Length: 117
Image (cartoon, rainbow, N blue to C red; front, top):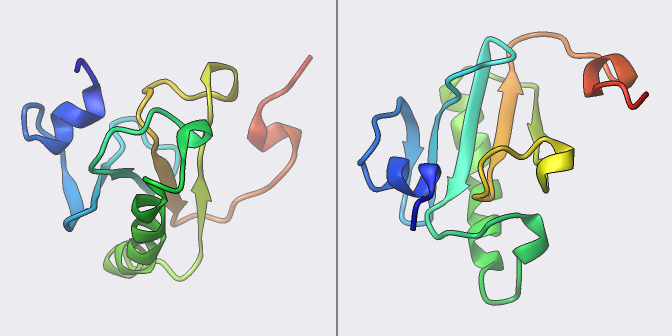
């Protein structure tokens, strides 16, 4: 499989790892949008949120169990978790992933989500 995140998980491509366990791998985003911007991925290839099933949902639970540990290791008390599903939503790597973003006060609305004109 020619998946960028699978290659990162397997150590074929270097990354700045912030967390790893049996189910989850987290690393620094190479184009951060905030002082803290980590990507959290399942260690099994799931292309997007639309492909979460009863058979693989354990990985999603493990990701959300890891989130507080990752946030604490980054000295974050408040943060945002983002998932983009599909190209039109901004998913550029077709391996399910969650952005943990923090370290700055964030707004909400068209200005922070992108305009739809």
